[in-house]
Image 1: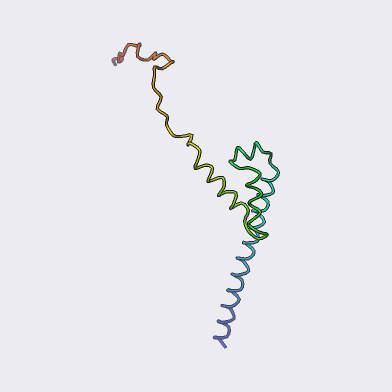
Image 2: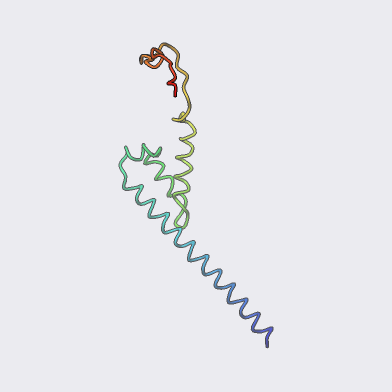
Length: 113
């Protein structure tokens, strides 16, 4: 009898784990579709700020009914990010500064104590 109880409890735990994963997958699917719907409501200028176009949103529907459209959209935005120069890339400019260097004209004296 103890072997039966151990097997039964193991089966119940396994079924519970499968159900929990399915519920989590359903929640993720619903969240992805809510995000996709929010993107569809945005105007073209806002989408362009995100690096997307209306055709990207249409292409995301190819993921199917149970697919994740936001994965396709994120891939498209990532592809376009690769073609943009990074904003944090330092640019080396040559030529004289337009701002006068005021600190260079000040005397360098150290106060004595």
